[in-house]
Image 1 (cartoon, one colour):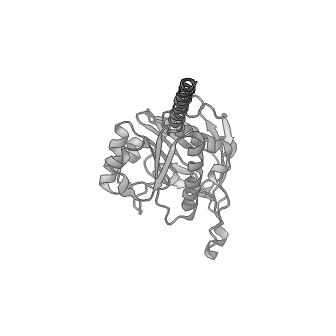
Image 2 (tube, rainbow, N blue to C red; image 1 turned 180 degrees about the vertical axis):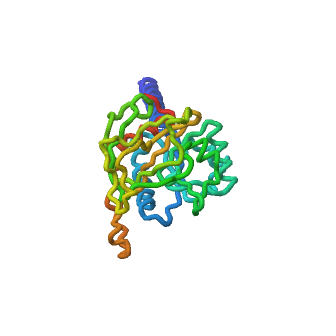
Image 3 (cartoon, helix red, strand yellow; image 1 turned 90 degrees about the vertical axis):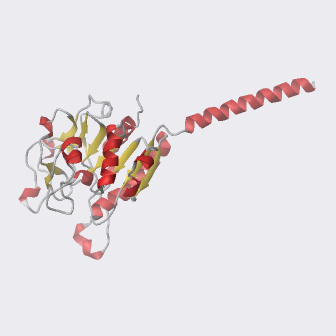
Length: 280
């Protein structure tokens, strides 16, 4: 009798150990993400950074990936990056030559990247000169910033649904308000660039001014794209609408949120899962 009890006890323990092992395997993150940000000066960009650093951890818990964030750009070095499969630039780019080289090598050696809005900005002369040819000309392909709409406005996007990261999206959808950028180079002429979403003509006129140059009435404007030589996706989104009319009252009130658009949020999440190597 005691032998039977002992055997049963051993069997139960073995089963429990197997279940525990399986649970441990299932909770291991599918991939690890590190997001770099600055969150200074522009209140709309700061608002987006705060939103992103709240939204991504929720998605990480739900979809089983790890998300870390840092404003310490000195972490953009080979040893630190070796622990992560995906790098995010939430609002800026590195300026230090060593950090830039570390990022370039990371991407050329199979790393993955997602960037938002101001992370592609460059304008000479300005605080953010175009002095990084590999990043702005080859990697992003867009060159310098040229102009933008104002004020932040929602747009209808025309989506390339034949790409792995966008295949579960509708052909068109409406975004949250954003400050949309126009670029120096025509991305359609770059054989390495695949445009994943552009402003649909149903969006025009886009922007409210007050300057007429800040209102788009026609034209082709890519806003999400990938460079097929790398594992990357750039999103022009990342500028929330703010209470600009009362900016001197220090209210800093956010009037819109990027991820409040369900399809926009899905587009970012699907792209991130694709970058992380998750296939469906």
